[in-house]
Length: 491
Image 1 (spheres, rainbow, N blue to C red):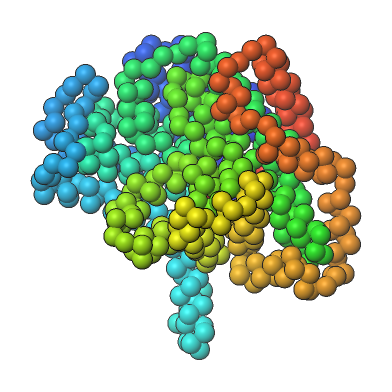
Image 2 (image 1 turned 90 degrees about the horizontal axis):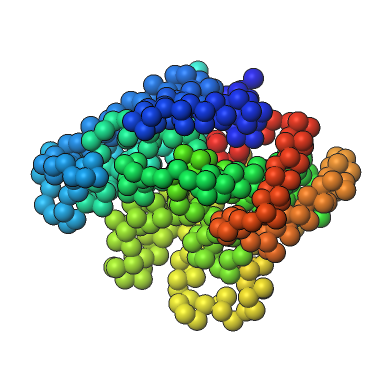
């Protein structure tokens, strides 16, 4: 049994029928002053379900950033929203600069150790082995287990310290408020990355209305349907194709496009459910997906895909590097650096780095085109399909665990490896009516249906009936599916 076999996911019976009802019951039963404490403690239960020791790690990280925030905000005083705000662009003391450095260093050190330690050891062993120094390899060195969601909560917690230092967010004086912000289970494990200034006022004062709760139910039901009825069957097609030793040309493309639909509906499903859960507790989280496969360029794609991460990289990496203020050459370098690091953030593998490089190269290329972009010369539908094709080809690097596997899959996409003895079995398994229907439903909902954010903006009886129908169907189907955690849990 692995870690991923014991985590609590939104699309599980224990969460749907035990944990969530209990949380809602306790949350609404306690007085206003205790709601953040209850939400924090139960979020720790949610996070520690797989491994309680991870709770200690997250608590330590939260405490460091809370204290650093107090040091950075020293002298701002108390105001009605619970904390003062530094003057943007004002002079900072040595102590404030030191506190910011401690916050950034502690978060990046946690991320580097737990996420990239094994990657470093593997690359060191490969290097010395290539040089013929096998006796220097660390084959028996200890291995590090990746804590759940560490890529998300370290970014989120660190953004608070940076925003307070910049004067973009108020200082939080209450540890219960700050720990509630960091640990809140709806968006804890896989985003969206909610920055403190986006919820600062809500932590101090927010409403709990029937309208919010109803929209939250709709978000959650539709997200569950995306996960169970679309992402999981498309993921089954993709798993069979990508895990096979070889596949014919048609099956390779079928599996690739199925993975595109899987990762989109899987991740957007989690974001929908997270936003819905946030509404249950009165919080309004930012939109994280905006129909990204309707994009007509890679630049537009990154304005619509995982919006919270794109904005994080823009505000905390691209702009500090200089953005586009230092000439075209430096702009292209900055775009490439940001996307290379963004790729590495997704996973400790050279495949992810190259995937980031592919997108960075495309962003730089599109910027060289200016207003006379090649996409503008094409019909919108052709530009959208071309963008979808480029994004899908990038998933070859993203989905495969090694460069060798990615190379083999790329050759199969071009039909260069011929038929394999097991190819017929793969073809038989994935070409079934159930998978065909799921694949076509994915196409239809990707390009022909409104996104969840817009669909739930104004609810009526028909929309409510639709949400409950797909929820009932999703729960019925869920019992027949093997355990399948959300893809971004491993990032």
